[in-house]
Amino acid sequence: MSEKPDQARLKSKKPTINKSAIRIPISLHFYAVEIIVIILVVFIINIYIQSIVKNYIANECNSRLDIAVNSTQNFADAFTSQIGAADDLTEQNIRTYLTNTLVTSADLSNQASIALYTYDERTGRQIVLWPTAYYSTSYFNNANKVIDLVIKEEGYKTLNKTQTIDIDGNIIYYRTLKFELVTTVVNDNDEPGVTEDSRQSQDNTSENIDLENYYLCIYINSRSYYSFMASMTLALVQAALLAIVIAGLLSIMMTYPLIFSTQKLSRFAKRIAKGDLKPVRGHIVSKELSELGDVMNQMAYKLEESDIEQKTFFQNASHELRTPLMSIQGYAEGLKYGVFESDEDRENAINVIIDETGRLSGLVENLLSISKMDMSRSGNYEVKKQNINVNKLCDTVIDRVRGNFIHEDKSIINHIGVKNLYVYGNENDLIRCLENIFSNCLRYCRNAVTFRCRSDETGSRVIFEISDDGPGIAPEVQEHLFERFSKGSDGKHGIGLALAKAIAEEHNGSINAHNKDEGGACFEISIPFVRHRDQLSKINNDSTN
Image 1 (cartoon, rainbow, N blue to C red):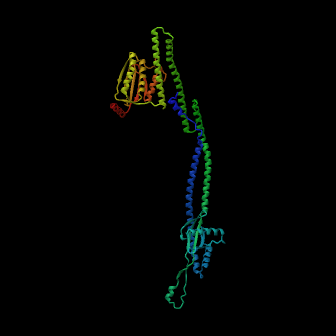
Image 2: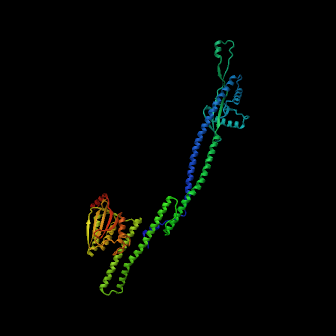
């Protein structure tokens, strides 16, 4: 035997536990976020600090070079005066004068290092005059490295402008100054044949001495600055690591109440799955989880209420089904074994069987219909709906119940006060809803049942009003009138009015009952009707058909 579609769909939706999935604790989620934030903050701060420090280093080195360059001006003047006073201008003498002036000068600033060298572009010959290896070996070696790289990159061609070179990962800021060696040569004016005018024109004439090019390199090694920046970066990384450790401890402390509350709600959900619907107790720290706990408590209460209603429903349904079945079985056995001797008794027994069968059939249909409404309300079933003409709906209901009224020798009074109105719903369900109300009123009326159909005061709903001229609704029944298996003194099985209410609510409507002033019960069913545009579309479709 094949499974029913609902059962197959239920099995396909059965939840499964994925044991192979990686599950990360919520504390690690918080910790990961904190680590990412810390790393991003440290990264941004480090970039910001490096940009600031690099600008500071460049400005500081430029400032120091400015001071050093300004101080060399006095040195250059002193050197020029010595060259001008010299008698023997040879390369060796110029070098000696230049070196001595550099060593003995008190005007040179200690803001930067100084290297004096000669370079001949034609031969590529270079000689570092200062510092000497005798003065300082390390200073001499560093100066040679700087001069070599400056000449290699042709930095000597750019004068009085700060430039940079990279030596072993260290940035060197430097400026190059060039010495223009110019001296004055005094001619002998007593030579014979020289006139006074030519003598005056030759006095104090200057000429450039064609010697090697002398350069002064003023440089600053920024290694100390960058070492300081590296120390700051290291301190920042250490602070970040410490912050990560502290963040781990704080995340554990902060998420423990959250984890505890989550586990508590998880255990509560497992109890609900096992059928234990006792509400969760105790304080839940998180506001959101506390709201979830309240919602789960309400859910447990609704489930418990639904479970009680379901059990009561099955008990009452079993009782209501057993009563007609026992009658049918008793009379059927009586007919089988010849208990009823006369034809009249046998006919009465057959009539009882037919009546009880009809009652049983009606009960089963109502149970199926109300079950369908429950499934529709829970979202597991969709009631098929369409636009329904209210006048045709009223005519159909009256035609169906007229036979019962004729059989009971009672009348129906109709007042249909609407035209060309449509409601959106299921026609069979709405007919069953109205039939159940008619059946209830027919059971208690004395002479007639009045049926009115009108629109409400707002003009948005159709009101189906069914009233009788009977004794009215008893006060003790009024409160539970639309509950399942709630019956009056002459009630049958207590399903009809509950089904009518479920159908009305399924169609976004309502139902209520009250006693009229002149006597008798009155039921009002309110259903929203379709708006004018949809009505016109429906009317046009009907006219074309």
